[in-house]
Image 1 (cartoon, rainbow, N blue to C red):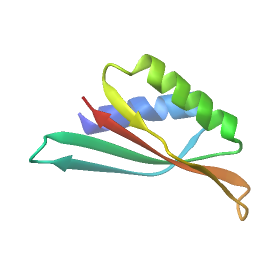
Image 2 (image 1 turned 90 degrees about the vertical axis):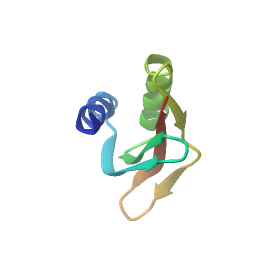
Image 3 (image 1 turned 120 degrees about the vertical axis):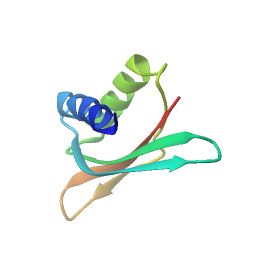
Image 4 (image 1 turned 120 degrees about the horizontal axis):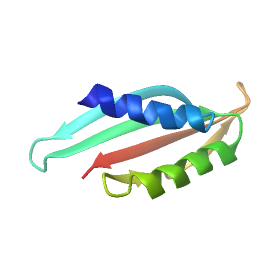
Length: 88
């Protein structure tokens, strides 16, 4: 199931020209919370913003999303962000 979820998110990332740098998965036993954490990179902030808008409109019934900060990496000239998706 996790592989299918990651593949689905990756399809959306590709649609919006956002690259997946790394991802993580944690599961809390006491709350049965399932958290996917995606480290994203993009050439501009608009790509990440458009991706978030798409995800929150199409997957709002399945996930709670959290994206707090988009930062700029001067070494690679890309923008970085961590997107968290909690399975409902």
